[in-house]
Length: 459
Image (cartoon, rainbow, N blue to C red; front, side, top):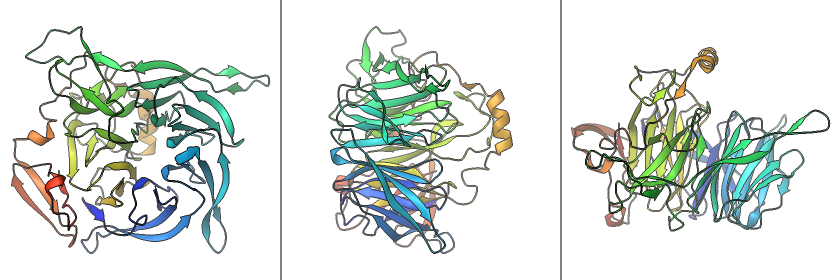
């Protein structure tokens, strides 16, 4: 595993706000404040023991304002991009004998203000978008029209996601609520059902965490999410690839009414979407985006003592304003941490379709690329075994309370046990390993301004 900030002119030195990988070709698409979408070819640096590199291929020009989000359709045939001013544009992939290219297809017009996030349905027939106008809109892609408006939020909708099994959609807003909508189909005259999403759960507050010092349940409640003062326009949440749980950023918890806030991301079980099942605390800055690896992996050992009862490992990344944490479902302790990568807030995360690369974008105008060695994340879980698992898996165990299972181990900034620290030299691409008690987070404000911050990975 190696990675670092790729120092090229991504978007004319302006903030990079979003990125995504194209499954059929492996191209990386980025969008930013320069109004353009740019496509990049990612090449491995493994053979030369260097960092992965990005080479510019082409630009998609149509937007007249900053591009806040872009996502490829599941088939890879379409690309949707959302921008300031309510612009939502669809692009189509064209393949000819001579070349492959993207061309403008249509615009979706209804949002009155900036589009901050969007997500495709699993079949690619629908889109859901979230906006500064406080609404979520479900779009019929073929018709190019509004299918349904979800307008219950009282402030900006900064994250939306679609259940891969098609039963739910979820949204996250700066009004400090996460709303989960269930599909209650309406019959049509020709026997076909019309999708219709109805709010089923509103997650907003929870009881204070129980601790050894305060084991008694408290009647006091605390907000689950940060308010609108969170210094980010994005709270990108996502369902796991198998649909067994929902991962939600921008979380906060307290042990008592007078204690400091603990930043966290929540794991919400499909079996009980009314409250978080697991907390992932430890970051010193709020979490702003999450993204799942598209590949499921074989178990490395028994996870019978863990919170998950899955026959495979799910790997996912959680980004804070200034760091990146990589987890899997066999442990609540991160398998890797990258800190000090950027001078400004992280805005988005993306995995390559083969899970070889993980990319993240930042408002400082740069992107970071992390490359994994072959089978470093594990052996892929076979499709045959996956189908069998669907019939036998129990999903996530139902929680008994809101207490995080290993909060002491998750206080990343206060780790006392010796760890193996891999330091990556972003200039020479060289790595060395030493055993020490790591300092996981460098203060970016005190770093020299004339050079990039050296990332630190804990594995």
